[in-house]
Amino acid sequence: MSLIRSKKTTPANTVVVLDFETTGLSPNQGDRAIEIGAVKLENGVIVDRFQKLMNPGFRVSSFIANYTGITNAMLVGADDCATVMHEFADFIQGCNLVAHNASFDKRFLDAELEDIQRNYDGTFACSLLVSRRLIQEVSSHKLGDLVAYHQIENDGVFHRALADAEVTASLWLVQLETLERDHGIKNPSFDLMLKIGKTPKGSIDLFLKKQG
Image 1 (cartoon, rainbow, N blue to C red):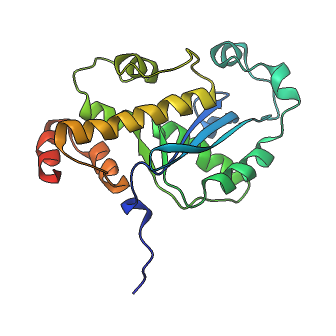
Image 2 (cartoon, rainbow, N blue to C red):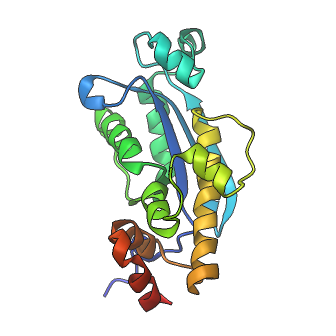
């Protein structure tokens, strides 16, 4: 019998929190990543960071440049996507992953890694889905709005990958604290956070009561 523990049963406070900035909304439409930022948490403490611009091989639109603050001039001297993603694939091996609106970041991570025939062995959780269940009284679950709601310390920079990854990590830890404070759930597993994100909002209180 294997003694290797599933990554889903590892603590929820030991993860890589990541964020992509991209040329558009869909890799299926030819959009590419232009920046990746990530923080590695171990037992709730940031132990490593990763941040790289990447040259997608074509000019970014003025809308994306204005939205992200990442200009074509900044990307000219950046490594190409393949080079950066090889480095990032090494960074995330053995780790579960968290992102805000994770389906977006997962699409780009999967597409960029498929291009270089690399993979990862963790599972994605979404801080947006968790927030919709734990903090149902707020009207907006956008990252900036949740940062303001929870009074999370930040430098006012959004839509840059590392800054967004850092505040998402802080939000994730606030969510873990909320589980302990409001529901008596201490040191939740990553698997529990996945289940919370998939539980219907109307059933979440009963679900959490059974976990406490």
